[in-house]
Image 1 (cartoon, rainbow, N blue to C red):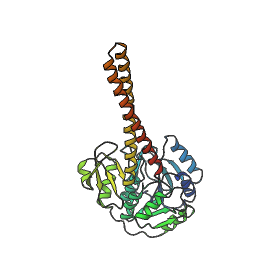
Image 2: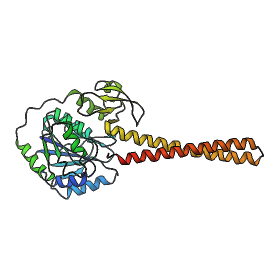
Image 3: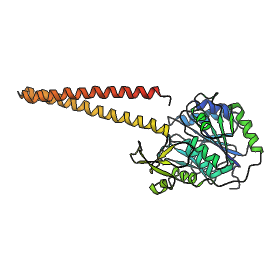
Image 4: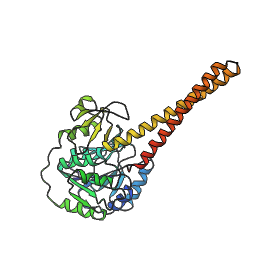
Length: 337
């Protein structure tokens, strides 16, 4: 495309990320020949417009919610809509409703991989405040494709997990305070970039999976080895991705997790399963109690006593299950996810 921006700057943020985004966006250079795409983990549909409004108040760059099929334009900030993956391909925006990655849709990794494929050495990744490690794999894809990797100074981040994960797993190009990122981007834009290189084939394949053009066991087999784990979302086999800088798993449907995210999701699934079991056991206890009373009213004392004992046994199981749920929830809140 003749009007394609020279650079694509992709930005990922999670917990504590909105304030970091506002502070960083106010420094972005208007003259930079770049488009900017942002994934902020959002919990509510309506907050997307709020984010666009907040960012638009601190910059003269155009700022809007990303629209499927729109051309990437210089000097424009695109915010991923809640519950939709944001990707870029051939100078255009793609929105997808595919499976969650690292328990989120939109996913930072999904955006970053697509940027690595589409812009290779002219892709610039920025990771801001957030918990766990979404964005590390995507940043590694940008690095392997010749792009630039920038992380917020963890000492400044409200939640330093995401910046620290990138720093601990790869050699980043810049660790920067938010107030300095705009000037840093201007410096990068003024330099001659090396010749573009192709993105690694496995990065291309994973980006295609996120586009839902290559979902299937055959596609996953090319980039991953079968593991002993099951997908906590769909129950299918999980495959361990080969050659990534961080341990990751994905199923052939498209769900994907880092190891730390998999632990969190397994705990959530186990808790949900136990709550269902508790409900069913309470209902069974209630039914046994009803039969106990019914038999007693008819003079069937032996049957009534039998159901009383079974009801009391069920109550003991219920008490045990409640203790298990309490312990599980205590463990979840104790771990700094």
